[in-house]
Image 1 (cartoon, rainbow, N blue to C red):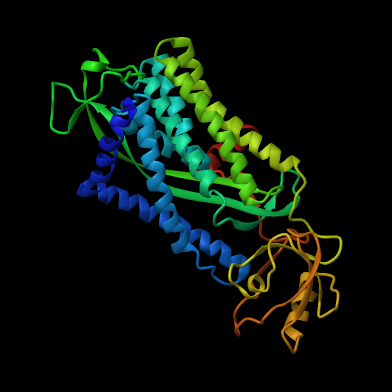
Image 2 (image 1 turned 30 degrees about the vertical axis):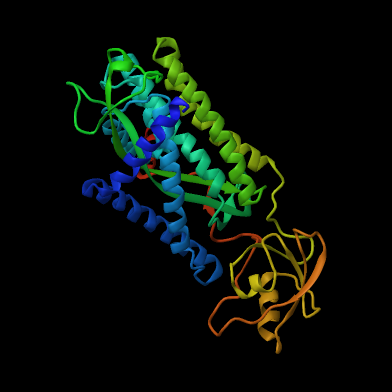
Length: 416
């Protein structure tokens, strides 16, 4: 048997047994509740656009649970394979990450907190952590996140009117996914063999330094951790599926480079400093490159030369059942052309029979015709058109937290 296969049943057993532990299960459920709240918030954002609930909260939440379990299992094998041992790093990661989140919501990512903690240890000697281990943990979690984004980052995309850097409002999607990640990691047992300890096979190299002794003679325990991963992005020049795949590629490359630097950091202080700097700066580069690709590309969801382009269509709504999809351009209702969305909806409402709609399919690139069955009284047609002009509601590209707003306010006073 290939040596690594020896750890597969052990890790799987430890992964499943963690859910029997009441304390661990409680923490996992708390994370799940927080994530469920986020998906419910996203459902309300869709309702603002369509005037009706899409009913995706339960579906998105269950998908997040399933993907999170798979990602956690894969992440467990990854951290054990590279020999990553965890001690007290997470006790420092969470408080720093939460403080950074108060400046800007995207700084909640461990890439920033991990880099800051590693730099602090390397320069000032505090806190007492192993920089290579904490950076390897950041890399491993981002590898898992890259897989999750590729598999389901586009699901449940929320239509939005987005204000670009030049102040122009364009149509697009905000991509937001959250996953509860149960993961099993290694911890060194001091003082000899203990209950739950396992002796690693002789082939296994301890890549991550931080414990003394011959790795082949050490005794380890598989301990459970709970993490929450989140993905936020925008899709303007690409469909949500295309954008999530591109983001997954960038994030995967970042995590591979960071993992390689973290491994080498245990043997060279200069490399350790480089890895600590790359953790936040490389993550910033991933975000910048992703936005650059999107903002420099040709927007998809912009007004058509004639007719009304659709930003999104409510799944299983009247328009969806009629065959309309995001990006399609409606050109006429019952053969009558219109100039704006108000006139379009007036034509729908005044139609005595189910209205016939002429449209150009984005997928087929051809003109088509369909009949939309009117919704029940008080229900929505399930259409979200692209922004026309001077939209009152839009999404800012950057979200500054309360501490960040306080800093900007203070900076404004001192710069006068």
